[in-house]
Image (cartoon, rainbow, N blue to C red; front, side, top):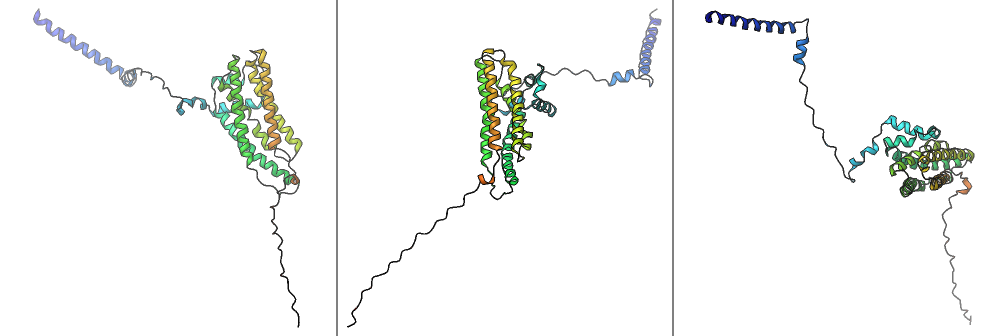
Length: 294
């Protein structure tokens, strides 16, 4: 019957709504936090569109930011490897492999700058210690030409020689980039920093031993890194390695003979200023004429 069917539909709808409400109450009950968690969980955000990488021109400083992207711990490991060249054996890995993964000019720049000013200061102090050793400091004066010579010699060496090596490697198809050469030559000078502190002692034999030891470690570091790539061209690679060693021997001798030479006070005496003597004065006497008495 039509009249009796309508109440049954209303009852069934009411029962379904009560059942849904009962389920929501059970989900939000204190013992079951699943419903609350589902309500508090935000909807997943839509993935943002990746921005294209910025490009910089060669004259902008941001273009060279990656060359100074090195942390303190990585810098410490690179400095340690430059002091112990025998850690390059067995090959690989080597220092060259390390810097190719993340090259930097931060360490080479500050190492070279530190050596420039430290050599100038140590040269003056070593000269002063030589005067103290001989018991006479009256004739010592600071020599500021050490700073000029140190800047031209060390900066020039660490720029010109890597450029020449890179040019030869490009000509001979050797796998060496300009950044590789600049980075390795910069770290190769680090060993001279602690040596300059010891070499100021007024003992000639100690100065020779310390400077030559630092030069040997630095040469081993240079040749040990470059020889792997130079072996690809045996016809010229060995001559290039020999040239690298000889040039560094010349730099080492320059450090010893110019900055750490033993000066005797007698050999450096300031000449007194020249005194001008006045010309002799000549007096002329007028002739006298004799008068007759009578």
